[in-house]
Image (cartoon, rainbow, N blue to C red; front, side, top):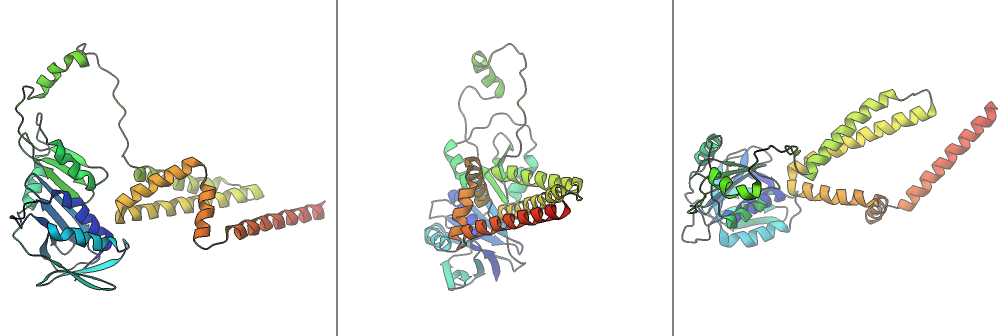
Length: 336
């Protein structure tokens, strides 16, 4: 039995399905191939022009197995997966009837076969070794580029050779796209530069280099912000003067700031690991809320929807402030 959550299994399918061959006379590639090596479940798909490999760790080491789910069964199987919360635990097992998927309500058997699938490990291993090979222009079919949208938010790309595949790398994802033949006149970079020289200028004068971009993505930016805030808070709290009331309040504020920044960072990293797409979407939505300046209203609505009484929280806090002010006034009158 192999255990994985519903989101990870659905993500494996989403990442690789655009590359499934539509040719049902070739059952080996007319579907998604699942291979479990005991540590990861790999999902593989190829139509011979592109090849996608996605992987996800299983919850605990398990037996090895391989099976192919055909394209005609992917629609309803994906629909069934979408009815589950992302953290729903699924147990997978290969049976004579196909892929058995067990949840807390029962067992679904997806028809599947163990077709002979193309050997793929050496293809990607060789491509990774070839990624440092200097190459000139490579021609690509832009209609295939859209296939990679579901692979990851950001992908790194290398050219492995003039007539060799384009190599794409994401988080737990590898992909290849075959080049296409080019019959035009501008076959190398020098020819393209010559053709564009009138538009680009021929003075030869250098221009200021563009600043390197930081690691892209709202999640990466927020993670950096949370780490910075954690380090700042844990440093500043020791500079507070604990002998004064203001200093003591500042110390407590820095402590809480550090605690919440570190907690946010850890939770963000966990969400990114479990569901990178959801993490990116959530942080972008959060950034819009923060920029709106209305987080108080957002928090009030969220508290109400969760069944809390935010008005009572406010009343209790105001009562606390009033009690503290009265205590200070009494202490001042005593020492006067």
